[in-house]
Image (cartoon, helix red, strand yellow):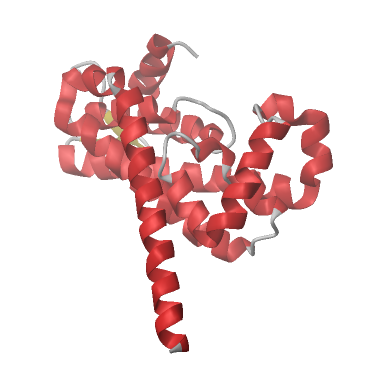
Length: 216
């Protein structure tokens, strides 16, 4: 979807547009980064023609508008992840082999996702969903791996909250200049990806060190 269409949709329909877009973004590369950045800018009052409204009530406080947008993104993204988990759990690889192209899930992407889960276990869920580079390909593999739904939902909510509140805060702070953050997002994505890999490496080393210390 073109950038102008996404921003127009969010600007016109506010919370409801964020909910729909972030619900889809759990399964598809649906520009979730731009959605949350622009939602934060709208919440901050950057555009005179756009405001945050929930159940017919306009939210005039920029702070509460930000919380509303970010919480909406978190809830919708988490619900979408639960749908993805169910697809993976009950459809499995055979379903994706036949219909994966509709979800942009190729066999190569599934293989990478499964290696990610095999290597990092439960940490793959919150870290993956907090990372722009891989977040659309986390939920389905978690279902295929038969991760318990309650555990997955809690971990997914953490990752979705970090992503939604973080990017909405960036848009809120930049206001009408939100485009600057979106323009440089490829570099931001790489930086976040590197930071996540470094964090995972640190946690693995720390865990191994603790295990060796216990054995002694």
